[in-house]
Length: 366
Image (cartoon, rainbow, N blue to C red; front, side):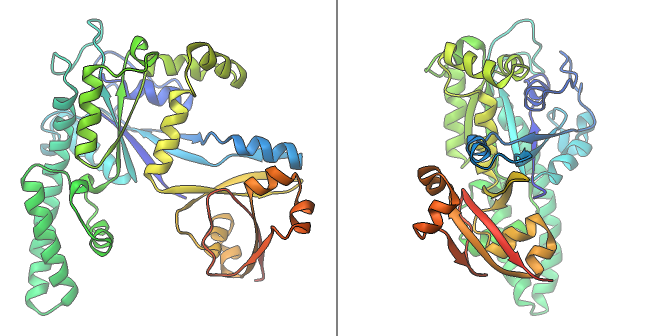
């Protein structure tokens, strides 16, 4: 699926450091604003221990994880909505992503310059949020002008859009992001068609120092960010970008040893990728055989034909049925043969909604 997370934040908050760690790349991460101008794109495998278990059972020629795309977008500054700091270009990059990962600096370090001269995570968040709101207000005003003309002519859809856009405009006027609005499912579906920046799902990442990440307690700066996220309908997590960049170059065994030594349940980047996956309302299913064990990404609620289409459009077009069994059942009983004997493999039709962790064989004819 063509779903992308854009990494944003003020200059010098650790965006490129986090991106480097995610992609094990070497994008410059310098101590001055606008080091990143053109967005850097990285394809990142989604950590999934189930693939290792499936590989042990099927012994395939290759194993292929599913992946996510991350984009390192240059730092925004106050006035971006009016073009300050190449703002229009950067806001255009944000418009193209599916979800936003907002990196916020929550550590003190005199050697790392802050664009505003001091550390205040809420001020930093509101600086960027305000620029997105201003851009959305401009977009909503233009759309409202267009649909109002159509509504006067009796267009029912235009009338519905006029009502909803008017509500959104009032909400944005109060300097509140679109995602914090209470919308019913139909309104939310309609609002997606307005392509507003503040309607995109967002995850705030508190970039903290090594001392805090190795502690169970959040600092006052980090807690303020978490409280803000909760108040606006967003998610939040903390990681240490500097530490994650060091962990990223280790082998899998070394990563595990490092996490065990420092009492970390998993690398922060694995947690970030999983949270981004949830943010986009994604899930995984598997295909498995002697040639390949592979994870596939689909949206929650996808039917079997839609899932088949992620493999190849012919699979969806000529879909007949799907053989489905659960990963947990396979782990419990050890083989497909055992699952068949126990009646744990089902034949599903076009209405079947694929579940997280399903193992699927598709039957099709074109």
